[in-house]
Figure 1 (cartoon, helix red, strand yellow):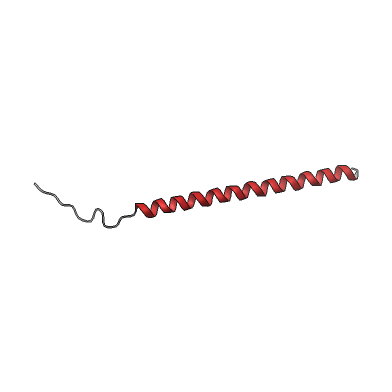
Figure 2: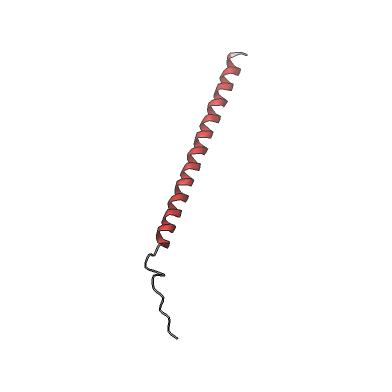
Length: 58
């Protein structure tokens, strides 16, 4: 293998690594946003005073 082919191969490998890291970063960012949204929804849905007393008139 000559120097030019080796250089091209190393460059492609480096590019693939950078793309993989960028995709993983984006996936982690998306997961973090989704988790934060889910946590906010769960916190908003908790109302401990509801359902404690039932007022029934007959």
